[in-house]
Length: 241
Image (tube, rainbow, N blue to C red):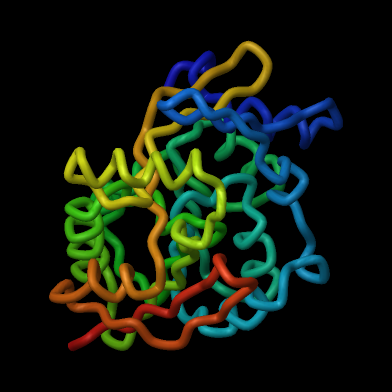
């Protein structure tokens, strides 16, 4: 990835070095908003929301953190004795992880078979179930995960129910998605920071029921769900052997 396109990495390394940083999210229909900010990428365990603390208890064995960002979860798990590897398609995010003494590689989710390793836990925290991007890519991604995990493995998957919004501009976007044959919570977005802008990419938000439906037949089932509020939740996906 060109450094000019690595907006996420640029804002993470700026924050790590103590400079001003922020994360702008731009949707294809022109809607622009700010994320909660890069500081959340560096939260200590004591600052985590309760549902993250509960969900991370399911982590076991050898762990792969997909979309590891600055290594917030890598750091906690390594301190607790786990064998953990992070992957991210942002070279600068991976650089931040390495500066923090964490093990991470530059790799896209759909290229993880290149690792040629088996894992017991796959993390998709902080809305990273969305990295699948679309209904079909969920199937493809979960098939990859099935083949590179051991028996009794789990996926810890974080998502947000898009249907809880009361804003008409979001509801109209959901309708537009349906007309295009996409899931209503499929977003076409890019990240901006200062002069940097990522490429446009698809990001998928699903309700708990939609997650249950899209994983059906993939070899994974929905287990315990930990809610943060009416829209945000973390699901434990269990491997069916």
